[in-house]
Image 1 (spheres, one colour):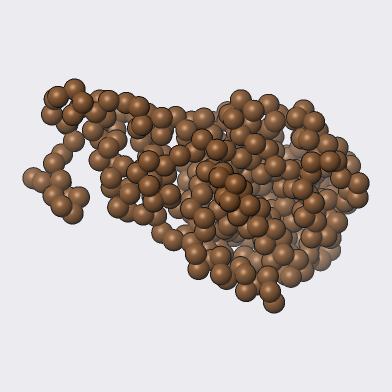
Image 2: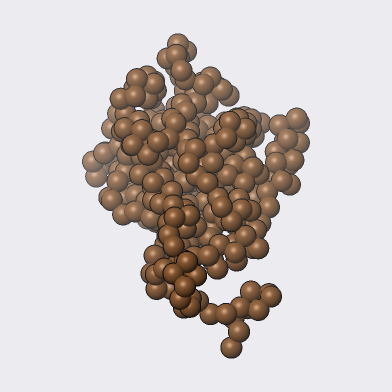
Length: 364
């Protein structure tokens, strides 16, 4: 299987964070003209970016948000407040620069790339990247959403997309998605990966009422019971209770990590993709930043599982990559501070940072 062989190649290219660069960045951060640790999470961001890129002067000036789009057969079960046609309409809206993610991405100086990996739309708006693996998934409440081969092909679409952006000079990638009904497979995947009951992690998604929420929870439970996805096999989980855009986003994470490009996840759908990517290759976790905490109940569970702390708390649940777009300037600010702040040495006064030996250990 050609796709599987290519996937294994990518996994072999993903490395651990560069501890030498991280140490050098920490030393620089500690010598800036401020009390130790006073810039909080911004200091952590700078150190992590040094580890990801292997550089003491990392850059995130060239930014992109990938909006993966796919349709879901489980919409037949009435899990969404919106009709399935909205997926296609929103793709056109992204191209017209009329969506929330467009506004926020423009403010952050980020490109928006819209990828059709699995919608039902046949006549795509000009500007949408056509990478369709199949036109929508099957109804996961009655059987697998897709085959394993299709899930691997969707992963490869994401990897290829990340590689193309890295080759263009993109230095940080934000994740976004569009697919009516996609909080349902995301919640199902989270339940499988974390062993939480569906009722604890299922949210109202696009805004369904309490009665529809109860029905949605039962659909997720039925999908897991019918398909029996193997939590130890992330591709099996993606195929049975996932989505094409979710698999594509997982592939973006794998590809970006292989190219040492940091990835900013958005809400619960991109979080489920991150869970899948990290189950395929745990080293991916080192390359992720959590942009915000969604009000979807599964999202906190996802972030806890990934060991990630959200940068923002804004009670958002839109998706599209809106949270990622908002977080990009925060991440860039961390590097601007490191690059432009004076050091204690510049002022000719002793640094409050402890002295270190040649191994980076504090000298008592």
